[in-house]
Image 1 (cartoon, rainbow, N blue to C red):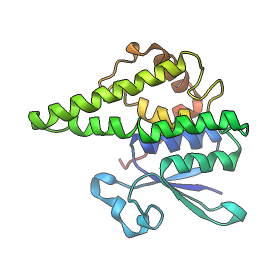
Image 2: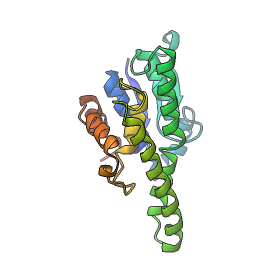
Image 3: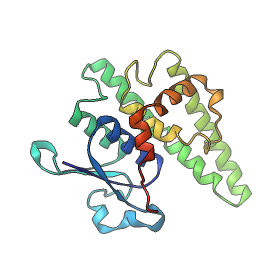
Image 4: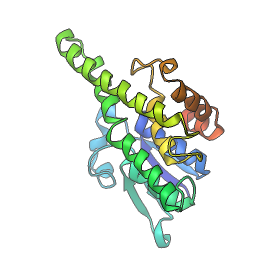
Length: 211
């Protein structure tokens, strides 16, 4: 049965479209235009009480009953467990995937997101402090990933995982972060591998906003 993906064209939204494509799950996009406040619609709040995209409804959930899931990290874990893909059963390998997924959720998402906000301000005094603070932290996080990827093909090890899907959604915006990936050669290598994948390409190509 077809999963409903309620989302918009943002890094967090792209994580899920990429994962769905990589997992080969049928889905349909329901655009939630956050630029128009549609995330506050009562119908959307029923499945995403924190008024954030993305959220999904899986009509074929546990025991064959529908389930809704909000928060992109929770969605990735749910989809991985549903399909048995991209989340290892081995405890050590699984912990590594969850560590790097939480790294993205807690750091490599909120920090670039703050940088996006301050870079968009028109008041130069307000813009300068915030942009310098959060761009510096964003570059630090790229450095953390670069060191990790020096000895690993993918972020959690030698196998691709939901942690890679989570991070690629934000690394896709590296130019907006004012980051030249040439400064982080291991991230650059990983980014090229990820973006060359058919499923990732389809996940970025699918329309997540209205024309």
